[in-house]
Image 1 (cartoon, rainbow, N blue to C red):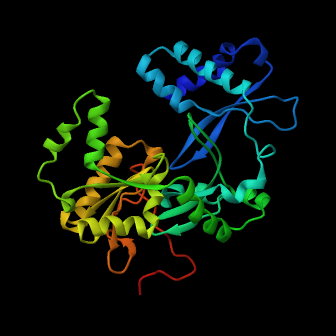
Image 2 (image 1 turned 180 degrees about the vertical axis):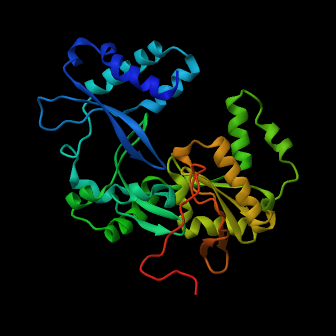
Image 3 (image 1 turned 90 degrees about the horizontal axis):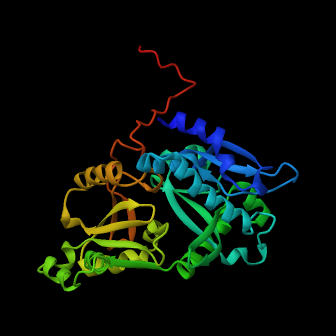
Length: 332
C-alpha cells in the first residue's frame, strides 16, 4: 500500500496495539516541522489533563519499516512497545526543565537556510552564508545518547535570554560539552575494519603513499551528533590547514560532520557537484546540510563560500525566485 493508505490504517488500528491502561488517550496525527522537512507526527493526549507531553512517533518512519517488512502488524507491535516504554518514563517538558543550569547547557547546530525557511520563523537564529545557526538545550546525556531540546522563541523568552547572549554561551558550551574532533580517512578505515573483524593494518596498505594534503579530514564532535558546526572554530580549521599546508575546501557531508580537503584536490564546483550527488543518493533528507562548498583561507583565518551552485534546496526541488514588488517592471 502507498503512504496515504498506510496512514489511514495507522489512524484506524494503531491504538488497539497499546495496553488497556492507555486506551483513554487520544491519538493525534499532525504535521510537525523538522529540520529540512515536515513529517506526520503521532502523539497521544490525555484529555483529562490541562498539559501533557507524549512521545512523538513519525508515521513516515513507520512506513519505511513497513516497506522493509511488508507486515504492518509487526511494525505496529514494535512501535507500540516503544510508545509504552516511553509513556512509563518521566518525560522532559518545559514545565519540568531546570532553568538553573540552562546557561551552561546551550549549544548550537547548523542547518540549511533555504530548506528551513518555515522552521526558522519560530527559532532564534543567525545566518552564516547559506546556513543558519540554531540553538539546542542539552538536558541529558547518558549511554543511550544525547537528549536535547531545540530552543524556540517562546522557550528563549522563558530563559530570559536573547539570541546574542545564546550565541556567546553556545560558543563556550559547545566546545566544553561536545568537544570538536578531527579524524582522517585512516581513522575511518580502521574503525570500519575493526567492526568487520578484519586487521586494522589493512588501512595502512590501502592508504600507503597518501600524503596529508591528499587526505580527507573529517570534522565533527566527540559524539558525532550535529557536529558540522565544529567548522565554526578557527583553531579546528587552522590545525588541518597547517597539516596540509594549504587553504581548505570544506564539503558539508551532513549536519553531523564536514570534510576538509586541500584546495589542491580539485575545482570547487566539481566538488560541489559531488556533494550534491551524494546528498541526493546517500544522505537522508533530515541529515543534509548544503550542496555548496566552502573555502577556508589559511592566512586570513576566514571561512567563505567557494561556490554558488544553483541547487539551493536539499530535497531536489527548485527554490522559487524572489519577486520584486512596488516597481514598474514593464519594458520601456
